Length: 338
Length: 165
Image (cartoon, rainbow over all chains, first blue to last red; front, side, top):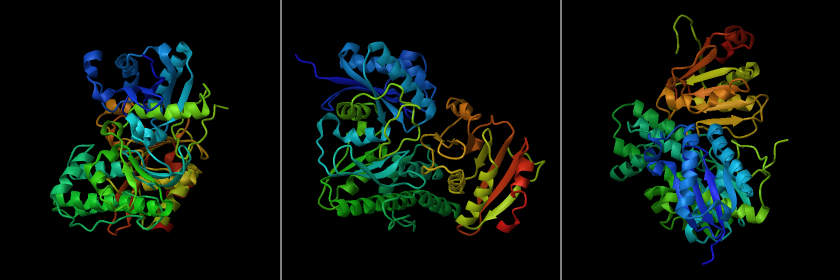
């Protein structure tokens, strides 16, 4: 049987150490995420969720497991792709060093991937087909942005958050209401039980495509300071306000750009409420696509897909590409160090 | 962290403009190696102040809250800005695993939710933010701790910011 072409992808931009083996048609052969496997069995200790130096501990095991599960040897790889930014400098450095070392040892091409572009590819893993032009909504703990793509890879950033991401606002409101961080999913669930009774603002609703969730978070805090907050009702009011902002901006983008698809990615795209709200027809005549739940949050499979596309269209990256913790979209050309 | 043998400089900011003016004065006097600790509850204005500080340092990118990613480096300004947020960290061990201290000597370091870590040692400047009575009112207490912070603040027009009050 012919083996398809495969790439090894590595992701370590924040909490997760992840590795994946991905085919050139974006079929995921293996995808290993450190927090999702029993690391303690292998390393004799639980790997904490937040500890960038733990990437050093987990990296080789995660890569080894990805290759083993995929039944792929280093010789069979077409290239090694890795996230070079944006992210936590200490964490990024570990993945980049690993990828560069492997490329040197195995004599494979090196592909530098933007983490945000990885998320944009996440909906296409395992066979989903998307059509262009497309509007992307990237909503996660660290990011909140609307991106227009006339065709694949031609990105125009329509708007981004001026302060907090929507995921961060969720998690902070949860903690203000007395739940443990990260409590975003709890707020989501709780909101199904309450009433939309608190008058919360919809920041920047009429102003272009930019977002601001800090003011919404502050308004919640102000209400809590007044005392006697009904948690369920506050959760509902907050979720309704957040969804209102996201869907209003998306609807505007759909009207202006007439995309074939709206693609909603990032950790918050797991939210059942967001999924049902954005597929209730209110965005207009457009196909709304979400990634598989396991590809919503940070993973290496999405880096593999973005890496494949980049490798095929632009070739390998220079092997002296630096870590780029401040990377954004549209993609700055990956430039080697001067 | 806030030792009470010194009296912090207390400023009332009634508007975004007040915040911008204070941040501009601070931006003129910070140097590579400085550590600024930010404390105060959710929504008290820490990130907003740091955004204004970054802008006045000439940082070109949009500075947002790094709560999720914990540490962001901004290198497009007059001096590099190392922006840290300890909000979601739970103990000193986690804080020490991030590695932001590696940038102490090559950037001005600003740390949000600094009270989540017990290991900061002077010299540093602490800025504590609180809500005021009015919706847009914020009160900041500026506490110079060690080094030549007191002198520099006075020289930079922050020791006597009467026009802000």
